[in-house]
Image 1 (cartoon, rainbow, N blue to C red):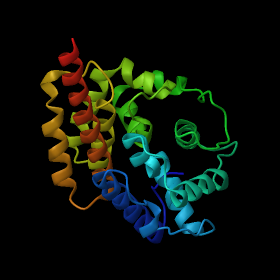
Image 2: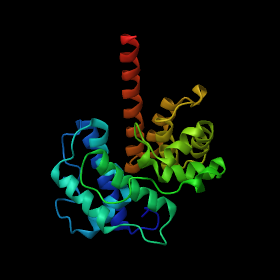
Image 3: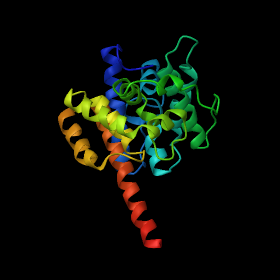
Length: 239
């Protein structure tokens, strides 16, 4: 399930939920993500749909801070996984997004359903860089440290193409696509140093204004890059 074409009510809940994720990330992962938006009602269909739209990012604070999700967050997330399982006619991005949710549960040692092996990603490999960037931006929730998936491998194999896509999205003022591409660039190697990713991310966040999904991807990318820099310094000190 993707946000495009959704109702204004659902878009509003998705916006609020994305804002909560950023707030919890800033809090260090101590607060509930769903408490201020979806609540504890796992049968709230609008809330569950919003969780499904945001996908694995609903539990991003737990993934990045290595904290077990709070029970309410976990219950609603698991219910969304079960309620919105992809069907035979679902798009590749929908299938991958759902897989990302099940793997997040596996990563957090929570009960999950679904195959451990990822779906086919050969459809991504042959895409030209503008289309590749578009598809990767839809799947930006899969861009987390240590990501082990065929999608992540495609991104890792084409850092220059993703960087080109990031620049193109910025020039086109497509802030959500730029933020998603920037997030992928934060977790892969080989990104051209001339790109100026940190400055670019700040610019995207500033220009996107109150777009909570852009803010989520930018904040995630900045968090990942900051932690990577700290780890690099620590590793250098031990060398």
